[in-house]
Image 1 (cartoon, helix red, strand yellow):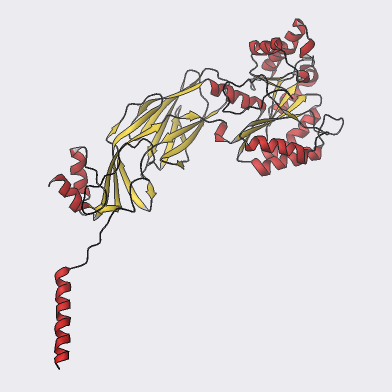
Image 2: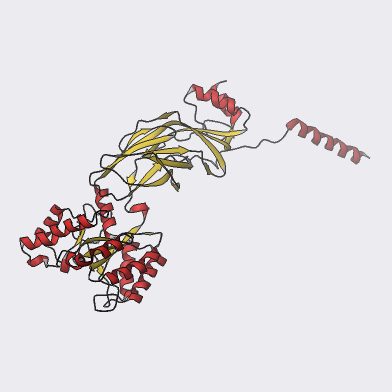
Length: 456
């Protein structure tokens, strides 16, 4: 009996102790949310803990924010309030159109056979490949309308390989004019929609006088076979009048030797130019139809979506325009940014701008010349990135980026951001200051810490 009474007394004491203590408190140390993942690239604010209850705390900056967020979140059990200064880098032109990793161009010399050119066109088109017909004007003058019709289809554009294929190393002044200036004028007159501005010196030879004449005439690039340079976009001031190419004909093992050269170049982010004469089997400078077809399929299977398949003419225009291009901010607020891009040398080639957005944006679109271009956001560390494709005018093209949304940034925590001030934009950057980050799930007890720190 005594043991039973003692047990009942002990049980009653335990129940009394539990009712007096209440529900055990859960301590939130804030260790799982340091704020390191949700800062902008220019965040100058670091979290410091002055609370005895765990979590991080940064006091509010503006009094009206104190009132706003106290009213909105007075019943929220956990929240984080974070202030920071966030800068956004200025846009830049990408190395290749549409931010492709490399570029590949096919060129076809001489223009000796319209039927061979048509065959190349028919094989290339299903694979999205592009090429440039580098013709001797003397070869196409007699059946000009057929060449015009072929070029109008869009897979092949046109450039000059001289008028009569004269050797540049042993040419007279009059012959040089005929080869360069007369061929330029002929192509501009008869292919005005193409604006042909690319050249290939006959026999892959080039003298300083010949190069200067090309520049003075209006040609912006010259292709060689050997002894030139394979362009990489990071090269400062590349010589576009000495461009290397790889000749592909019956003497090549296309499946091994050529693929190694092409693959190495494209995997290294370079611009690779292929030199063909004709797609047929009539002499040693041609490539057999089956080899060419297999080569096109190999390019598509391995590099489609990674490499810019573009004509020699288009890539040259893009790169020359990029050298003279500038872009700077003109306005910015919490919902949009506006800047103006210009090119000193404009050949009408559409260009790509890489635009950096604040990291908390989850949607954006561009307004250019009254038209809307919807954009896909890529996530990079501490920033969002969009790519805008547009023609850039010499007098300037205004591009406005309209931003929207708050991002579910990480750990499934919903963030909200309020921009109190936008720093005046410069040529290089602009920034958001006094930005508030409210995280309803991931930090500390709101009512106790937030109110006590304000002394209310």
